[in-house]
Image (cartoon, rainbow, N blue to C red; front, side, top):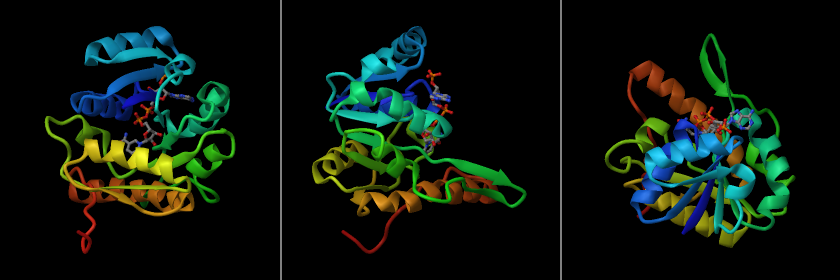
Length: 206
Ligand SMILES: NC(=O)c1ccc[n+]([C@@H]2O[C@H](COP(=O)([O-])OP(=O)(O)OC[C@H]3O[C@@H](n4cnc5c(N)ncnc54)[C@H](OP(=O)(O)O)[C@@H]3O)[C@@H](O)[C@H]2O)c1
């Protein structure tokens, strides 16, 4: 699969790029700065380009820009993305005395992104820590994906299934992204309390 990772210079995008390249996918990481994309891409053995160039002629765009900039990034790239399916992995967190919490109070970032692009949007991978993606082996966890457009969700599930040792599971419509984005806060808090690198496992399904 040919995949562009917008904001692929971050820890999550780099880890994802490495996992997918190892699985045989054709990966281009994007950045707001083409030179930065190329430098990091060369270091990890994939292609690199400015975000707007990276998203052209690919089968799937992964929106892995910093969560607070994800919506503006999608808006700016909408013309270049055209109708290419997009997978949004963003989770915006707020931090307080009692730990991390979901920053979004209304629609998820993914739902907002879907309202500014012409492309079908899926959301997922929120429960995978960047550090777990960067390990030697695929992380021993499951991964959840949601979306309203069946073909886009299938592509996202295909990608998700390549980056974990567990299963990529369909969690339903795009509105479920509110729960999936919130899950990242729960995982951050579990890691802080118990000192690990938590992921999720769904029980009770084959
Ligand atoms: N880190 C994790 O463990 C984890 C887990 C689950 C989900 N996620 C989600 O995955 C995404 C990437 O995570 P990350 O930790 O790699 O994030 P990050 O390092 O904070 O940001 C990723 C990239 O986004 C670009 N960026 C920074 N500020 C931006 C802005 N204002 N507008 C547009 N682009 C901006 C930067 O690339 P350039 O400067 O090169 O453009 C940066 O390298 C986030 O949306 C996050 O919520 C992360």
